[in-house]
Each structure stands twice: as C-alpha cells, then as structure tokens.
Image 1 (cartoon, rainbow, N blue to C red):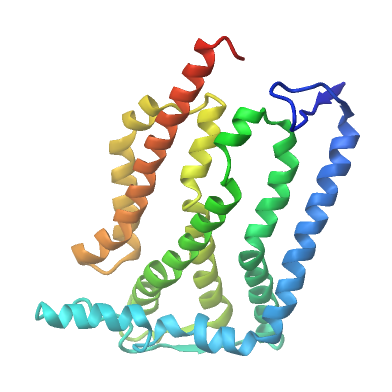
Image 2 (image 1 turned 180 degrees about the horizontal axis):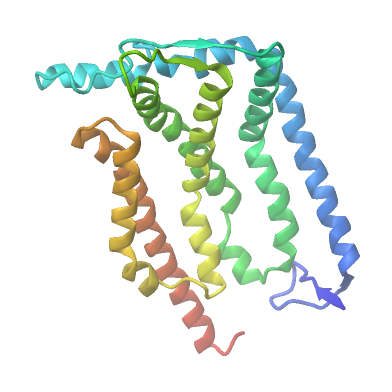
Amino acid sequence: MAFRRKNKPQAQPQEQDMGFLDHLEVLRWHILRSLLYAGTLAVVAFVFSRDIFDKVLLLPKTPEFATNRWLCELGHGFGTELLCINTKPFQIINITMAGQLSTDLLVSFIAGIILAFPLIFWEFWRFIEPALYDQERRHARGAVFFSSLLFLLGVLFGYYVITPLSVHFLGGYTTSAQVLNQINLQSYISTVTSVALASGVIFELPVLIFFLSKAGIVTPAMLKKYRKHSVVAILTVAAIITPPDVFSQILVALPLQVLYELGIVISRRVERQLAAKAALGQT
C-alpha cells in the first residue's frame, strides 16, 4: 500500500508513491532531529541549573515572586490580606542520596523540551506539510509561529499564575496542626514543571480545534453546544487550584475560557472555508 505525497508547486496533489516504510524513515529523521534540539538545549540548561533552580523554580514559593508581590499589593489596595499568598515559605528537603542530581537532570530535560518546542513543532510540520494542498498550506501559514507562541504563553501563564496559587494552596494545606509540612524536592519540582507544561499544552487548544475542524471532527455548533460544560469545568479547576477568593478563580479561568471562545471562531472560519471549497467543486 502506498501513501500519496503532495508536491508544493501543484495546485492539486500529484501522486508520488511512498511506501509505509519510506514514511517511517522520513518521520524517524524528524524525530531524531527533534531529540537533538531538545538534548542540546537540555545540556545548556544543565550548565545553568543552579540559576534555574534559585531564580526560576524555587522563586514562586517566596514572597519576593512577582505574582505574589503584585497580588498582595492589590489586596492591600482593597484593604484585605486574602490576596497575600506564599508569605511564609515552606521548607523543601531532599531525602534520597541521588535526589538532587536526578531532579537536576529531569529539570534540564524539561527545560530542553520547552526551549526547543518551536524547533520540534517545525520538524513535525515539515513532515505534514508535503501532504497538504497549496490552498490548505496557505490557510495554515504561520502554524509554527502561532503554535510556538501559544505554547510559550501557556508555560508563562502556568508559571506566573497557576504555579504560585497551587504552591500556596498545596504547600499550606494541613490536615492537623500537629503535622509539619516539609515538602520533598522532587514533589515540589514535579508540581511546578507539570503545571507549566500542562498549561503550555492547554494553550494549544485553538491549534487543536483548527486541525480537528479541518478533519470535520469538530464543528462550531458542537463547541457552542458544550460551552456551558466548558465554563463549569474551567471554573471547577480554577476553584481547586486557587485560594478561596473569587478574584483568583477569575484570574485563572478567564484566559482558559478565552481560548475556548477563540477555538469557536477558528472552527467557524474553517467551516466557511470548507463550504466555499465544496461550492467550487473541490474535494
């Protein structure tokens, strides 16, 4: 069985026999180059690991962190202390011999992936692009840039907004006054990095909706139908990870709901493009 690859100069795809193994070989090289990008930047991150820990990862649990200071100042403006979070930094401990080294390696690897994301996405886009029609390629122009931008914005949102709120809630939560919180290093780092990565992936929602709409799996009517469900789900997540005040919940929920609404707009645009193509007799 042969797959059909589409040459760029043609308005319609021109058949070019490529077997399944040929496609796997092409994909393999894209994956290897992606791993090379991530590995190289992971080595760079490992060299600067102390700065990454002291000035990035461990900072959200301190009062000096930008978000913590801003929220506290905002709360003082309204005459309340409810918005002052992470005012009492908890102690982080390491309980295994190789714990700090393994955590350092993990953080370097994750940093490599985040920094190399534009290059990684570009490699996979190069694999997908030859299979697109010229018109589809024009509509998807800038996909690498916007996907990378959304991912990095998501990581920043997770780091500056969700992380300090989550650290404040989880680090300060107690079942009894007799239980002292001494957070394990690996537990803390996994929380910070997973929140940042998850936020980056969530911010890819408009891109995902674009491709699902192109495939006819998602429609604007479907997204509108489940809009109320999305609002409930987003508010529930925001209520879980934020302090018990409305402002913090809105601060987290609003950008996520904006992404969902943006997805509806994108899906509607794709639907119109597909309808115009069908009217012209294109398939």
